[in-house]
Image 1 (cartoon, rainbow, N blue to C red):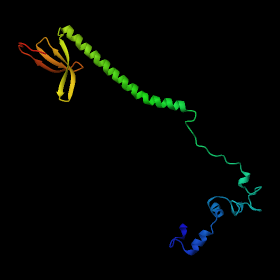
Image 2 (cartoon, one colour; image 1 turned 90 degrees about the horizontal axis):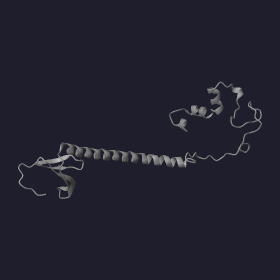
Image 3 (cartoon, rainbow, N blue to C red; image 1 turned 180 degrees about the horizontal axis):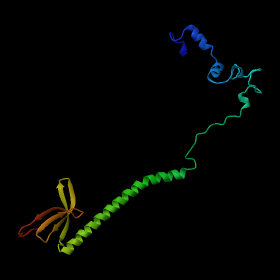
Image 4 (tube, rainbow, N blue to C red; image 1 turned 90 degrees about the vertical axis):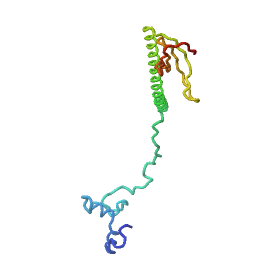
Length: 174
């Protein structure tokens, strides 16, 4: 026991601590007078100040029911499944909508560029080819032969990648 460690208390103090009962602690920490509480707090004897009809035992109590854990999903399975599906499909739907908006924007941009070329009178011959960037990598581009003696390469969005002006061309083959 902690108070029996050597050097903390003397032998007389240890004996005095061992004599302290629960009744002494209750009386010293509350306003209950000494004659109003029984010596053994948990066992009733004849003549104790707090009368009770009989000693309380487990037989006189109601039977204990087994405690069951709370299952928050019981009865909510369908709502839980729908919640999970919504949480999965919202990001997918947002990504799909974003992809669709980008595609729509690019197609409108290409259409506007083509309309501007027709209005200005710069409508030219376009050839769809593959440009080799490296021996393992190629990309799809359009080669545009311009009316101003130029040769341009356009990416798939219609932006000019390269433009070569051909001064006084005699002849060129594609």
